[in-house]
Length: 227
Image 1 (cartoon, rainbow, N blue to C red):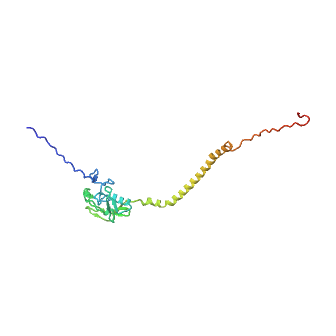
Image 2: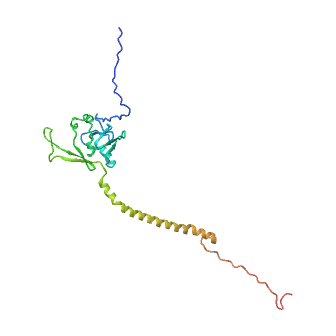
């Protein structure tokens, strides 16, 4: 009796719907931010939800807000939908629990992070035996800069007066150079041409004038004159 042919079934993962951005997954099978391509965590890379349901890390959203001059309206990098940022800044945005649950077990509990000026700060707590955390002297604060570097802005504020003086000196030098070039133009080019047209040579010196011979009429007089 002939054997029936075997049929192999393969399961195909459903494709993403049109218009929905593909979720980035790192090599370690952990979701990552679509802006900085770093894996999420429970501190500065905490996954935050925008009103359009797109997810980005806390650090990238904080930097976007700093670039926009501290405006409390964030435009989604994908769909440009505007999201109103709470008064406490991007750390107060809703955390994506769906993404947070995909992280390792020790990163599934969100740590408190706050915005202090142009810095994101997080207080590390010391771990006591048994896994408990205590906020004692061993804890320390970690901050990252998300805005413009104030140290680089300080010399820029004292530069306008210096730059104005340099510009004035540069203009003065240009004026002197222009005058020198004009004098050279007159001496080297225009003056010899004027001499050529007026005197016939480039030295502006007229040649010696040859005296023309003068003939006087001879008059016969005296006994030796011709009749």
